[in-house]
Length: 217
Image (tube, rainbow, N blue to C red; front, top):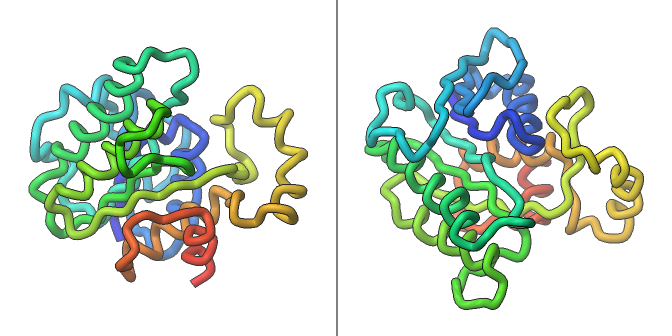
């Protein structure tokens, strides 16, 4: 399997990248990001794109891959709604269009727990992510999945971590015991993406419990 991963300079993308590099089912990885991620590996290639909105449709650099794991994203904290929509919705759809036509490709969008599929709720970020999921599902890919992780545990050796992560890491063992359907490791997230890309699923919205189950098959 040859995969594209976005957001590898962030915690989620880096964790998924490390799993793909370690996984024997993945033979090649193309990291698409605004800057170098600092990782060197025989499987890894990089495509530096300063602005996903400037990508052309059917970008030749993005062709010939079996799956795209779209892990790029940003918190809505401190952002105006239109600014968050541009980064979350516009950028994601522009990237997806740059892959087309790619009806052989699996597109996985990392959304988040609490996303609003109805697009009618009171929480702006949840509506925007819901619209992103819905509009991606209408594109002519082989299959499209929306992954909705909640709390995520980093992989050992990761360098792209939020500053507050190390202060919150102590709570993860407790969450695993008390709320197993709320927490996943990034290794599990990566494995789940690889497995669902290979085997498919009739379920298109993948919640935490689904992620953890997919990682074990």
